Length: 255
Image 1 (tube, rainbow, N blue to C red):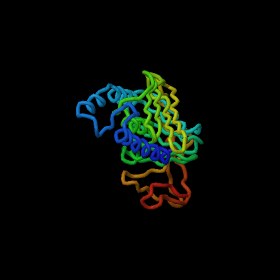
Image 2 (cartoon, rainbow, N blue to C red):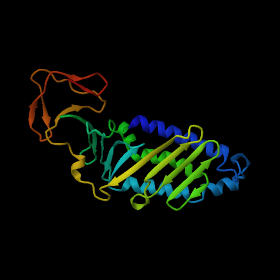
Image 3 (tube, one colour):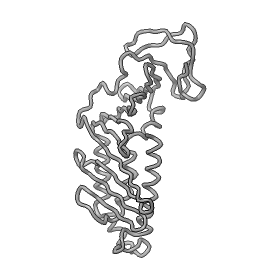
């Protein structure tokens, strides 16, 4: 999912620049020919403030969001709206959990979890939050729309392509973003499917049962268990740990 997000973010920013450089349609003046007041009016057309307001509302809402890119699920993001979150890959092989109340971050793979304290190690994974993707598209709202309606916003840049943002999710949240390249005529579609709106189970931000926990300090370096050493499982019981440890500086458990 992270790779796709980076690709989409780059495309979003590039297209936003084209909107200003090339104008928003044959009947629209180019940015370089607009007066300061024209540009100010475009910025203050209400779209930007409204879009950012929706993003701020999403940050505070307990919700689960599945991101679907061109028909393929990229995983699910859940949050309690107060700082705790969970990302689960589409094949359920990897889970990242940050529990703000306990100040713990877990990377779960199979029956093993790597645990660290504080948000430092969790920070790089927060880019999986759909808010990160939506924030990139906020750049488009500085340019006047060329079509659409209250809940379907459209920008058409002749010779470059078309962008459509649909706001048909709960509370008017972004439900779909479609971009079409004028040269290749290829269309990319990103969908946001919402569930657990307003009430995400607390268990989403706890370790799954039966998971063995390996600890990692705030620097990202873990303890190196050896023969006969112990760790704890998610129930707090002491369990044996096989030979192995963390690769230096990587934070990854290597059996």
